[in-house]
Length: 109
Length: 149
Image 1 (spheres, chains in turn blue, red):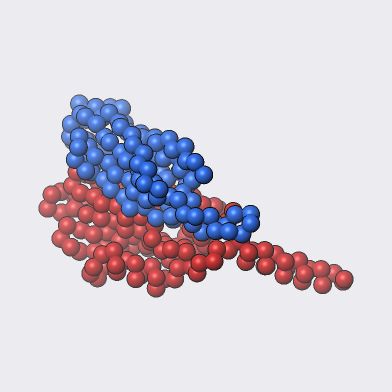
Image 2 (cartoon, chains in turn orange, blue):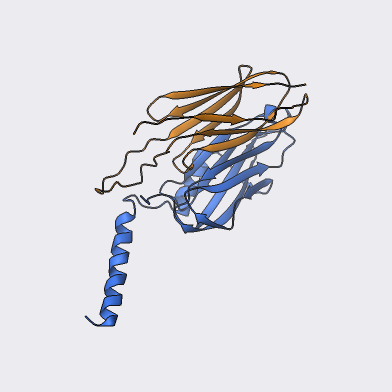
């Protein structure tokens, strides 16, 4: 099935220097577990997002190795110490090798 | 057919149809979950510092909210390097492994997970000094979230 992946990022709009903020991410994706059977009784092949990474002005700040036990439309939130303005770059890796990317501007100060 | 026969017949039918819905793979056992944790991080975990927040009873095993937080100053010298989550009743015990560092400021991750049945969710945190900390939590699941169509 074709995945129409819409990445969503949410961070606070006003951030003080050094503040620890929560970064909320979501990607619309079925996360087919490989355990499910179709109407004919055949196993539906696994197809999930198996990895999420985030870099902050080019530096890696978060990495997740994801298993099929993460729910559909994977929502993953983590914390980040906001030291400077710039960009957050996110990458979700699909089992089929596709990488879905999103960029979020971060304004500190 | 008398009433008892009908009821028994219905019972047998629903059991059979439930079995048909179950995946072919065997469910993970607590042993498989423990084995995976040993593979993910070497050493003897101590109990404490890790807090698992999840509902005691989840209506829907397809999306169970889970927060794992670890008590840590998250400084260069003393911080959490990784958090691993496993579930001991899913077809595969692995859930997620995240890498963290002092730049995170706070060792906490929130996500939604799938639970096949009532089972134990276990989190393991790796520290900069090599120590391991663990906590677990039982979650009762009303409708399982793995093999259902």
